[in-house]
Image (cartoon, rainbow, N blue to C red; front, side, top):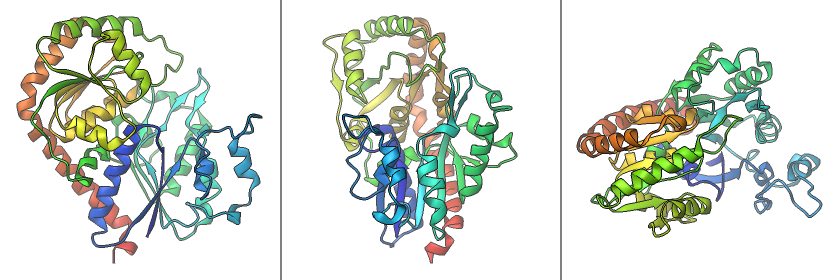
Length: 379
């Protein structure tokens, strides 16, 4: 059975955690069956074509000819194709719903839906489409009203939902957005919490406080003023407070975050790797975390280690589904950070029970939903 993921490749370990978690769940549904997994780098959809995986960016020559135009020019069946040959296609846990009219950014304009779903999936009449752990990417305090009267985003959301045999969402705002359109997705914690189960990984004795530092607390500003200088100052003050109390490890998901950590303390201990499995192992030794990266927090939670997340958009509120707190970047203060750290130390003893209960409920939901949808393949 061929299962194709719409994901990223060698781009973001958070995406790797989500994908590996979904693979684990599929393994539970398809026990004993041979599964073949393949990935499409969604930011360069031409990688759907076998032999074109090296096109990891949208430009393919010094003349800046975008690979999306090359893909559009090539007939569909002139090459082997990961969507056309798939039995199951999975959109793997990412922001899927956003609408920033003032900034000119709309989910309907994403680079992958048209070439992968409209052009290809709709030609594969035997395949099943799953939209798993779809998330929102609005302002931190958004109520979803930005989507009102945005016809193209609403049409895209409806079309994607109707094309999918199953849609689950990973945050309450995504659920609210779809419910406002009379759609009814299941809200379940992000499947990244099962990634360690795919590799049989277990928690080690807690060794260090993990800090992850992104200068703006996330990936995008969406035209909003974010108080990055204040966040830098608060984190430095907190670091001075805690550095003699804890063994501290800055876990950096890209090279830029290593540079950021060194700005907090040029002697700080940092971790960076190109291998997602290395991150899964390093997070197993955490006691607790102060995090900007949401999926770092989810991996630590998988081992029973709680985190406090500081974010700049609605993705940070995914933590609510696994019993953790988050706060908007601009609202963070030194005293708040110290208080949250002290709370984490106390919460650590009980968090594993809180997490495991939610993980079990989520597991049952995922397996039941997947089994029902994939029934024809489960025989």
